[in-house]
Length: 323
Image (cartoon, rainbow, N blue to C red; front, side, top):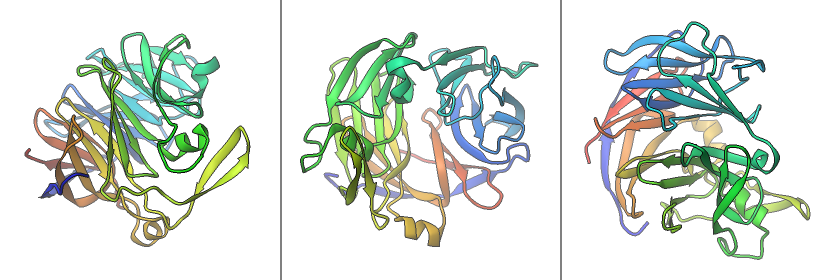
């Protein structure tokens, strides 16, 4: 980071909903929160009204049948204002649901990954018929596919991203993490878990802005496996980095850990630091949260951050901010 950010302490207000057993990821859309449920007991997601803070209804049937999906790994807004999408890493399936209540709770549309598209992770919409992704292996940092599985274009290269003569698959594995896009700005954000590194892709120009910090640390690791099937084994005493992220119209937000595996075992899961950057990659603020969270999303219009708490009675905590 080029400079020290302004630091703000944000107190939170918690809301608990008995219908949501193990809240996972979340999406803010149309004044509603869509919250995934990792318990696999009941429904896959739940809809909350953020004005009244009332529970509205569940959505998403667990299974492998038509309109069903076994799990939710991520939630995506999509381009239609009246729908949202969930991604199942287990089933390699993208499922679309309405934001309004329906009797059957099933997905109204599903896209299944196949062929080269099967290796894509971190899927996010780049148009109404294409998705930006990153791959399990390959030389490109970002890869765009048509939803029928046709590969369109790669953006950026892994080569020389870190010191040493490492293969692309090793470097790509070190940079795995959260990918999300903003169709309004045609920008995409990759926030890395193992390294404190973020990248902003401008699809129109193809330019990638890289952000390192706060430690600018490349983790120590060993290479395991044989040629063509290698992976990095990061040492347990290395600090983790960005556990979640959000790409808005004006700013990007990164939930930073800085804790090692041992510290997580001793202190528990959940993070209390969110770094805020402008879209040119300049750090603008550090938010210190009074409640640890595991995931978050942002309502930029009303300057609210919604987080998932990690206590014994998990719920949604709301932080007001001002930039």
